[in-house]
Amino acid sequence: MKTRTFLIAALYLLAACAKDEGADGSNQPGNETGDETPQETSISFTADIPAFVKGESRTTVDNNWSELLNPAVAVEIDGVVKAYTVDVKGSLTSEDSFLWGDKKEVTVNAWYPYAEGSKISDEALTVMADQSKLENFVGSDQLEVVSATVTPSYSVLSFSHRVAKLVCSLTVENGTAEGAIVRLLNLKQVQEGTSVTATSDWKALMVPQTIPAGQDFVEVTVPSMGNLSFVSAPVTDFVFERGKVYYLNINVSKEGTTTVEISSAVAWGNSDTVSVPGNSTDVNPSPDEPEWGSGDGDTDMSGESSEVNPSPSEPEWGSGESEEMPGTSSGVNPSPEAPSWSPEQPVELPGTTNNNEFTGN
Image 1 (cartoon, rainbow, N blue to C red):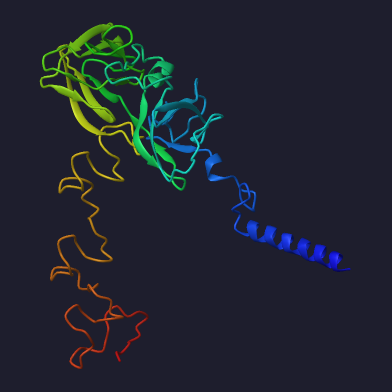
Image 2 (image 1 turned 180 degrees about the vertical axis):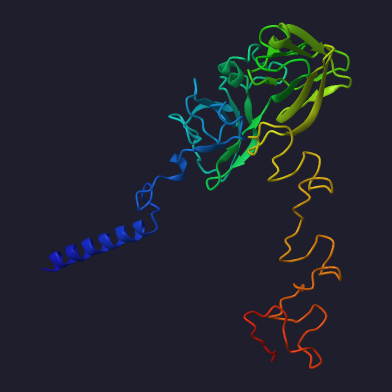
């Protein structure tokens, strides 16, 4: 009987020890809930991209990566490059993804299109020559992320453009610009040759560079003028930087001379969906002005509502304003100068109807 009692006590003791050892999970693999351990958690990303041109780029319109010929994006962490696949919403995942391990944050470089091994250097970057073909125009865009810090709670990669975009506006004084062909001449880093043919609406991508004053830069072929070609050179150096949109005005005069000038330059960002020079009037009236100037806009519409002030320059109604409508409501004050009704004022109010008289107080 003593032996049996001893064995039962020993079994209870072993069970208690096993329970104590597993209470903090120190002797158990993983954790009690069965969640994935941090070492096994994959690093995934969301790709955020500035807008390209609405309706033209399949890679950068409203962060939509749909219909890519190659949806592979290169992601580099600690010198190791892996291919991630981007979906239509910008989610980047990989079958051979990076793992968080014990890291609290990582530094990420990324680029599109995917290039195995390392990113194409700035010196080796090229654009396609015939951008009148949509696939060549879109395919000339290059995107990158440089040294982005990513954490488990924030894993957005914000891509920027490595090339410059030109948007041309064409005026033909002795004909129409319909069907005109615009070519950019004497460019560096073009895949085939030294010129780029713009799209049918005269847009083009180019590697950042400087076009010196006096060097032939724009060639315009005008069908309405017998397919004559006109060449123009800038009068000052044109400096084109990465990640910017440049609006060019090209004018073919009646005499057949051609001039070209940069009317404005803006950052190539998410709001860049307008097809006219300058910023949207919803934001700024022009690229160089942070607000509306004295000569801008319709003079019939003042800067402030008359419900607040009678004019932008006057904080209250002036002496020349209509006496039938004082600046302050009579429901609050009888006039701007008097805070309350005074005994000396007439009790009969103007504007009464139906021959009835109303008295104050």
